[in-house]
Structure formats: structure tokens, C-alpha cells
Length: 192
Image (cartoon, rainbow, N blue to C red; front, side, top):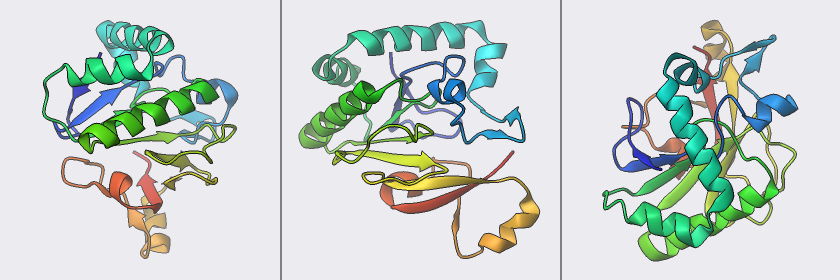
């Protein structure tokens, strides 16, 4: 159910997807910040289109997310016997509903209280309530609300970078940068 690291994330970061990119609630609701001028720049959808096993794996995660309790989620994650210090939700997809926000917060609480593991994610679900979050670090994609850890915005042209010289620009590799998990505030992403 869990993976650890990839070409952008260190092996000390576990990932879990609540939904697939194909079934992303934000895309269906029209709140996705990765849709620019009618074109979807979601990097998570390409592996699902190119590699059938990726979609199958994420569908299995999506199904299990609906069925598991916070306690069974944490137990199964810790049973992996992998050395990790961060959990990232929704490398693909987004929160399906408010219950998922609440469940993720409970998971984050259990992981932080027992193991000092930071749990974080990004979301385009501006319609949900984050005001009760204490342990889960959520960044709003293109919006800010009470309870969020910060926000992200997309820069569509590299020529616009000079306008944002005093802002944090994502370097595109979490193996050496931990700004999203450790620092609150705005993070800018250059569209690629």
C-alpha cells in the first residue's frame, strides 16, 4: 500500500494516494490549480496513462483508503519496517471529502505522537474545512484558509520568475529540500 521515495522524494518519505489522478476530485470539481488555460499539467496522470500497473496500484490504494481506519492505516504503515520520517498523502489525486481530511488528521496525530513522523500534503480542495488541523500539514494549491500550513501557486512562464525574487521557488526535488513540510507560507512552482 505504501511506497518509499522516488526520483524526487527521499526514501525516508512514504507516500499514499487517497485517489487516483484519473479520479481526482479536484479535477472533477474544477478546483485543480494544475489546469492552466484549459490544459491539465498534472504530472500524476501521466504514469497512470503510460503504465497500467500504476493505475491498478493507485486504485487498490483508493479502495483501501475508503475501508481502513486511522489505526489500521498506521499499523500497516509501521509494519513495513521501513525507516522513514515523513508521510506524504496524495502524490496523485486529492481529498475525496471532509471525512478524508479528518481521517488524515487522525493518522497524522498518531504518527506524530508515537513516532515524530511529519504528515503533509497539497490540496486543491478549497471547498473543504481545514480549521481543525493540528498535526496534518496541508498546503492549499492557489488558496489559503484557516488551518492550512501554507499555499502554493504556479508560475506559468520562466520570465515571470524575476517578479517573485523575494518568494520561495520550488527547486523541484524534495530529496534535498524540505521547505513544504518544514516552513509555512507561500511556495511557487514553475510550470514544466
